[in-house]
Amino acid sequence: MINLDNHPSQKRWTPWLDEKEALEREPLFSFLVSVSVRGEEDRQYVREYLIDHFGSLAELLSLSQSDRHSFPYKEPSFLVLIQILKELALRYNRECLPGIDLLENEQDLLDYLVVQMAREPVEQFRVLFLDQKNQLILDELQAKGTVNHTPVYPREIVKRCLELKAASIIMVHNHPSGHENPSEDDIVMTQHVQLALNLFRIRVADHYIITRSAQVSFRRLGLLS
Image 1 (cartoon, one colour):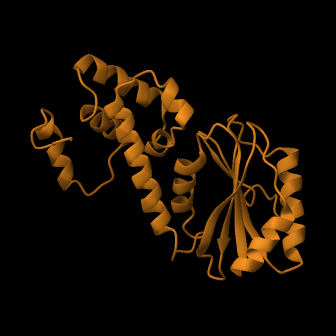
Image 2 (cartoon, rainbow, N blue to C red; image 1 turned 90 degrees about the vertical axis):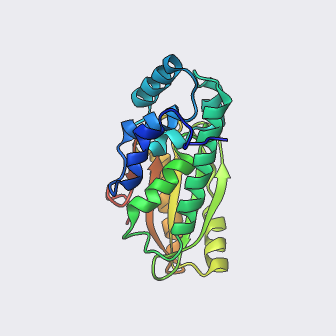
C-alpha cells in the first residue's frame, strides 16, 4: 500500500494539497512515478518516457492491454496504479455525464471518450443516446471490428433509439491507425444513419473520431447534413 506520510518525497509533494489550480502534465507524471517506481535511475527513465510519449494524463490512462505488454518498464506497481487511475477516471467521467448538456460540455465528453477509446487496438463504434435536453440516456458499445473497420447497421441504431426514446445521438469511433481524417466509408456510413433517423425525426448531433492524439468532430467539419 502506498503511504504518502512515510514516503521520502512527502515534503516535496504535500504543498500540492493546498493548490487550487490543476496540476501541469510534467509534475503530475513525476508524482505518479515517484509513488510507484523504485530507484532514482528507473524513476528518471520512466518520467522522461512518459513526457516524451504522452501528451496528457488522459492519453496515459488510455493505455490498452497491448500497450501495457509493450511498455518498457515492467514494474507491476506502476502499471497497476495506471489501471486503477484509468478505472477511477472512467467511473468519475461516466457518473458526471448524466445530467449535463453534452453538446455544451463537449470537453467533459471528449475526456471520457479519450480514456475509453483512444488506445484501443481495434476499431470500436459507440453510440451515445441523448434526450431532448442533450443529456445522456445511455452510452452503448455497438460493435468492435478490425484495426481499420467496424460494421455499423443503421437499422439497429434506429431500433435502439426508439426503444430508449432518444431525441438525438452522438456517434463515436476510434482510429487505431492514428489517422484522424474521416474516411469515405466513415462519411457514407454517417449519411446512411442520418437518413434512417430522419424518418423518425431523430438527430445525429455529432460523430467523433478518436485517436491517440486528436479528436475530430464531423459537425465542425461540416459533414452533417
